[in-house]
Length: 486
Image (cartoon, rainbow, N blue to C red; front, side, top):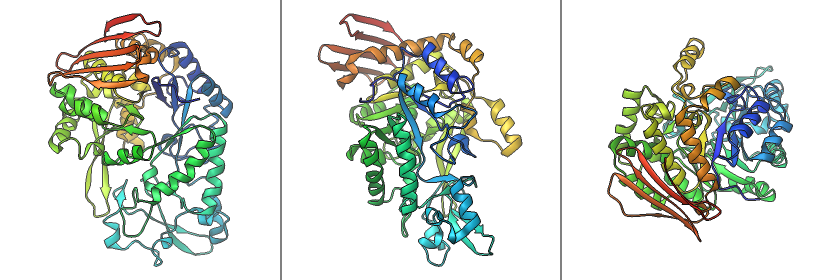
């Protein structure tokens, strides 16, 4: 069965209720009419990065439940899950065997020793400065083995728990094919390939999205998903042209330009960038305004003007208390990578501005995903990052990762702005026009005039970016024409 062309929810297993059973209850009670799918963020046993450092994929963290609980959600909604091909937990049985037995370990070849790329066992300085990094230091990590042998391995991310893997190793291919098939057989219909751009390491390159190696890897993994009629969603942050390349290869893409571009249109009250993008963006995509990560910035390079990008994220930081998440190069330079904070707070906690942004998302090409904290119009959670700062120095993404127990969630669903968003999502779920084609009609610079047509069905929105008001007219499946103000 193809994916339902309906909104999806992004959530952790313990963010709407404390476990998978309670989450399933929330989904069925509050969201059955408004979503067709759920992106269930990593629910595997993990030792860092809130699930993105798994020890295995055939297990569910016991505090969340079991794979049977995951499957039950998948029977009611299209199920999307994460697969993280670049790294695995230091605490996994594979790496622990490697630490214990060194070169005698059956998993030795599964990990990426620096000597595989540079025989001398270290990255030359002139090479290091060109490598695309997610931390301000070298990716080299020294490993001491019990027999006294030492060697450097690769670690892309800042946590010492996230150990990079050699995706070309036969051992890796055997282990990860087993993991991947297990997920597919459990009913996962859309697989998010987290940080997939980092799997390609090659001498003389940035070691990020290296061609043709990236396509060879994706072709290898795609043969498994194709066998189960599942889809892949590569997750990568960088210049918007990467998404176009995925689209050209027939893969579903992320519209990571939409969050910053929509915020710019809301702040400035005009829409040329957004209007142009909606006309040319890939049609087979997933749209987001917010996720468990920050608001993408680097993704807009080459499409938005640098001064537009900076003016937009500076407003979020200076006026709405966002935090900056940086990206690094091996020569010590850094750039603004993402902006951390809840999308509701980063639009000034203005209900009308927020619903205007969501209306843009619902009319953009692709399947719209709404993050759980955005669904509830959650605010920046400063208490969470202050508590975290006392332990590990703080982490800006936790501004947007508040967990709601059942009682708290029940109250949040009663907020007027949440009810408005749910009505908008229910409309997007039921209207058949979104299976057709989008036309961006002529309008002044402060208005978006959008219409979807599919045979006898249509959905039209006139979105006023200055006054934060949207007039929507559409046909129900019965043919009845309905009008409302979002």
